[in-house]
Image 1 (cartoon, rainbow, N blue to C red):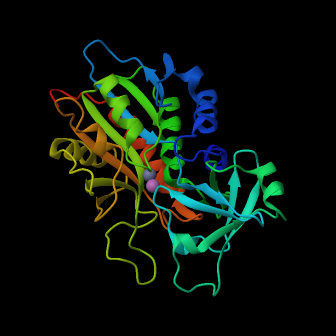
Image 2 (image 1 turned 60 degrees about the horizontal axis):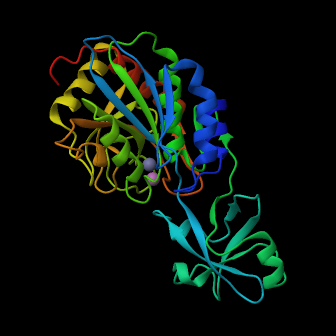
Amino acid sequence: MKTVIKQLTEAFGPSGYETEVTELIKTMVEEHVDEIRTDVLGNLIAVKKGAEDGKTIMFAAHTDEIGLVVTHIDDKGFLRFSNVGGVGIATLVGNRVRFANGTVGVIYQEKDPWKELTLDKLYIDIGAESKEEALEKVKVGEFGIFHREFEDLGNRLIAKAMDDRVGCAVLIEALKRVKNPKNTLCFVFTTQEEVGLRGARTAAYGIEPDLGIALDVTLTGDMPEARRMDVSLGKGAAIKVKDSSLIAHPRVKELLVNIAEEKQIPYQMEVLEFGGTDAGAIHLTKAGIPSGTISIPTRYIHSPSEMVDIRDVEACINLVAALADRDLGDI
Ligand code: CO
Ligand code: ZN
């Protein structure tokens, strides 16, 4: 499990350029599913057929990660950039960027470091001594990601892009464990979530599921002087009540709580004051799809060092696997 999380989080996949991640996932899951395909937006859709009288559940975890895009290269070879998704500016100075071809650079700030931090005062230094030298490595319009390795601290793990490769890992492990499920399961590894839940929108339209469940990270309130929030690392799967993209369908929320209670899966209720997930796009598809979210509690989201607890990951896998086999009645 930790190896899968390491491989996924270290892969390159800024929004719109997720192919390395989806290809990697394909190799991990193809022998465990009945069908596998990729759609126009790059979503990887892996299907496990259920019983005749089962429903269709769409599980979504996004493959893209936040990053940046080169907007300008100056005469001395320094790059200027814009954000791809919700990049935390405070986490950038001194951090490293990696481009698709392996070029690495350091992000720094003009004039006094740590003062008046805005994106337009930051630049990337890829070690080039001239514009010509820089252009041999990177072009305007290229996307980069944070360059960080996975770290195993025991129960707790740190990596870039835990958002949402840890959600992908939950789905991969659940689909391996579930044999002959009651419901038809569409595991969708979505694209472009970080720029507006875009992949999930077209995938849900194409699948038209009876139930939509997103797997994604959520904030916690358990660090020093943290924003008040009743979610902690190590206390179980978080069952979403609401965020700014979705009010979980009451029946879906109750279903998840009931399953967790019955199977004694540790869980906590999540009220996220801002942010959203793929379920925000799924539930508004066609005439509406009952949807909810299972969240993996995560510290330092959208920084290059996002932290999760492996026990929460395990709880999320158990919840997904139990739901896959559940008689959904007339949900
Ligand atoms: Co995110
Ligand atoms: Zn996410």
